[in-house]
Image (cartoon, rainbow, N blue to C red; front, side):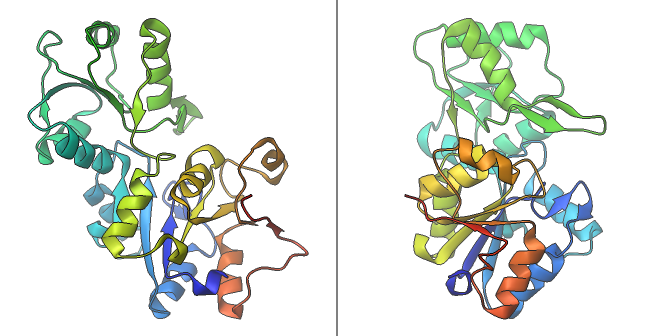
Length: 277
């Protein structure tokens, strides 16, 4: 039952907010969890914002958040590179803020493809054809590590959608045949790190998100229960096409809040509920 969960792991965009606007019920749900002595963390694949960027974002939206409550794909990537590839130089496709965050974890970066000992890919608003050529040359030199923050193909902007890290990596794969190791969702790395950080067992946690192929699959891979909300990408009509399924589907986090206040696992009359097989 949801009422038994002690750790709620939230995606941000499309789950709790749209841009800088709260989705109805999101703030009430977070306040309720705090009041009940439960814990929550935010997990995002957005590699353009740091923990402090999100602290400021939430502050402007009226919520005080500690930076330790935010786990980003770039943060997870920095931790992985620090632990698995110490003293190795990486060529990075990413924004300047992303590069600064990598350096904060001790990751050594180079702009010279000839001395690169691995390739690091993220969302890059300053991507050029020259960078892509450099990346291809690096990937075709032996079996150097190819690490990427997240597999999302697109990310939203003011007009519609633009290419995200996954689209950049697809270009590189088409040219070189090399596939990256993705660190962000749906890799289980971030959830397992969150469980370790909070000293929680996977049975005590639940992942709440709006994308099946990142959020829900991430939870499934990590062995935690999942909630899909229909305020972002996934819609109920899309669910049958996936081999994996969320434990619960709610119209929005507002209904999650209502169920937790009632102490009920969900109204089966209007809630798609299915255990992962």
